[in-house]
Amino acid sequence: MTGYQPAPLPQDRIEAVLHSVISQHVAMGWRLESRLGNQVVFVRGGQTNHAAHALITFLLCGLWLPIWIVLAVVEQEKRTAVSVDQHGRLSQGGLPYQGFTPPPVNRFNGNAQAIAMANMRRQLRQQAREHARDVVLARDLRIGRPDLPRHYDDGGLIDVNHAPAQVLTSITGVTPEMAEHIVQVRSQVVGFSSAEELSAVAALPPHLTPEIREYGIFLP
Image (tube, rainbow, N blue to C red; front, side, top):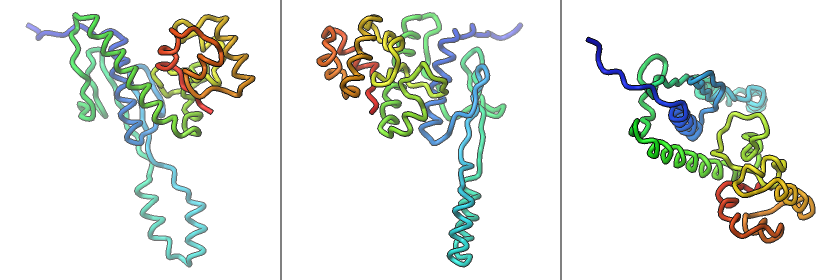
């Protein structure tokens, strides 16, 4: 007699687990290198500037050499792969993954799963806003630009100052006509700084402001 086998999780729940793992690793300094199916590969280190260290070593008559060696060892490139199976179980290198335990979700409660997913997406937006304080990093990660190729998940943010009109319509309530109007106005004022400013300058309906505040980001 075989033991009880739980039903496979829906793909959206598996995606939620993967997004949480990705967010955790990025916060710890890892870079997402690739994703294949339900497996993600992270990389860290490997960015030692040997040319600069060689120059410093030469200028200091070799005194910098021990420091160069230590940095080269510490900053050596490292990789790790994390996968999730159809039941939501995480593994790393063939062993159970200890870095993250997904919150329990009632398999038979669709509302609980939907709430868990919505909260996870909101957390991703909050993290993306933190990362976007560094404008260069925000552009490299393409925060708010779902129209561009990227690996970073920003939770559904839209860069109101740069995204094309068709992307702006993904904000609930923004019609294609409103989106075209926003694009036209922003070209005249060189962008906006907040949802309130956008609503006032572009004369948008007041009920759109909370939605724009939640999903819009205003990068310079």
